[in-house]
Image 1 (cartoon, one colour):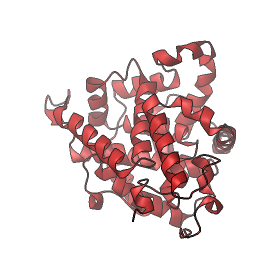
Image 2 (cartoon, one colour):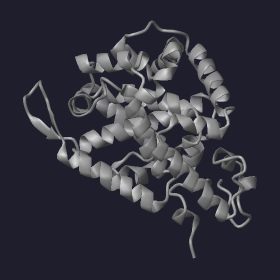
Image 3 (cartoon, helix red, strand yellow):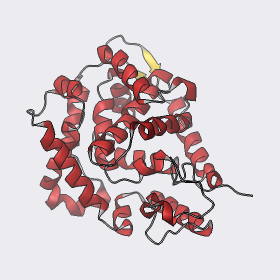
Length: 305
C-alpha cells in the first residue's frame, strides 16, 4: 500500500512543507545566492560554468525547480533531478585564479556551502517574515533538509541538522569568506537583474524590482552585509516589517497565478503533486498551500507536533 512518502518527498506534515510552500521563499532564494557568492571558489564555479551574468533570475528559477522537486515531487521525480544535477556537476571544473588549481564542482566542501547558504536563508527569512516556527520545528526543518542534500551528492551525516549545528558551521566558515570581484558583481546583478526572455514584457516595471533586491540584501546576516558594504544600513525593525509585508502580500496571490513565476516544467510537477494528493484524500481545493492546514488532511494522517 502506498504511503504519503510515496506521493511527495516531503509531505504536508513536515516542517519543510511549511517553509517551502511559503512565498517568502523568493526572498530567501535571492538571499541564498548572495550568501553563496561570498565563498570564492563557489563563486568562481558559478561564474565560469553558467550564464549567471546574463540571466541571474533564470538561475533562481532553476533552483526553485530543484527545491520544488525534492519537496513536492514524487520520489521518482526527485531521484531523476538528483541524478541529472550530480551528472552535470561531475563533469564541471572550476579554476581558482588565486592558486591556478582546478577543482571539481562536486567537491563536498562546495556542495555543503551551497546547501547551507540556501536552506539557512529559506529558514531565516521565513521565520523573520512571520512564519511561526518554533525552534523545535526549525531544527526539524534542518534535519529534514539533510535528506535533500543527498540529492546533490552529500552524505546526510555531514550536513548540519539543527540551528546550533548550522550556527557552528557558519562560524567555522566565516574566516574563509570574502568579497571577490565576481561576488560584488553578483550582488549588483541581483539588485538589478536581467529578465529572462519570456518575462521581458515586465521590463517597464523593472524599477519596482530594486526594493525587492534590496530587501533580499538587507535580510542577510550582519556580518555578510558588512563584508559587502553595498547599501547603507537601515534599522533591523524596518527590514522585518518589510519582510512581513512582502510575505503577506505574496501569500494572498492565488496559487494558479503565483505558479506562473515558475518554469513550465515546474508548474507541471506541482500540478502532478496536487493530483496525487487529491487522489490520496487530501483536500486540494485551496491548492498545495492550503495543505498547511491539517484539517485538509485525511483523518488517518498523524498531526505533527
